[in-house]
Image (cartoon, rainbow, N blue to C red; front, top):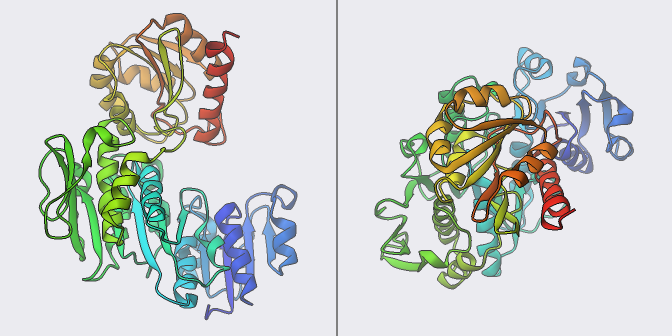
Length: 453
């Protein structure tokens, strides 16, 4: 890095990894977090590395002498420290941007970058692409919003295939970040409590394309109104489950097809795709297109499409007990995700658990699919009342918390039903994250229902 002093705000995984990477390069680092020092798990390690820690506020003095401010995804631009940095003329960049610069400047060869964003499916698509590339014997680093900070790879200079899940929060503060292959899975209303409007949210997502060049590839979902209108500067590659996508990837006649290489090629039968549901057919097409553009062989693509195991908490079957399927879709944190999840189940046979913390979502889009698919809705958490108003007409019961919801679902379920946790909300009113929520649901199902406890 050319900068001699950098401030880092937010000391969760990404901020900590970046502070350590910068300190290892001889950069003077000031790191701040709202938590007290004794609450910051990484405090002893980063202080031992020479990082100056500003805890419990933090104090704007952390910006003194800084040439840029790097922020973690959870820090909004409206926060006092980024606002003060802008007032002082200090650039505000994401951890993603700074880590990308380090990796590009120091690589002993050519990195290949695949970036994936979107409202729903981005974690599945990122992992699926990485799976295909690994089957092709590529040296793959899966990083970003999916859980492993990009900065944590800065210790190595060897070139890799970086598959990076990027969020709208991270994209707000990029500058030069560029991917050889960039994917937008879809854009539907989400995080409006932070972005304010759908247009602003979509604009943040579209930034994944803005630094691309003629030789790069931009992959968009032709079936999704929120992203199909994007016109990136790079080669535009479409994918679709409804129609042919010339020069792209699509499903038709019971198979998945690609025309990315110039000639039409059958990827696999649709029935062979490892993960069920229409939304996963979209995910499979996006993944296959990105992997092909990154250089994966047809054999690796087919193998990855048909053998991928999927990710936890994404329409994951937990158990089948007395003819009732229990499914964990805790990652369904917005209404559109729930609509797509419901589409994979028979009409009138779902007992749906909805609710959680408020993100400014419009739950009214749930009314029709819930009326068609669910015979009972159990609401939990902070947004229960708002959801009940939005789906008025559906049979609902206020459960309040997960334990009560699982008990009520077990009482109501009949053989052939599916009990689906797909909350349409974030988890922060009752849980630390969607993983903890899904794990709690799984534990209750296995303890109280599947094992008859």
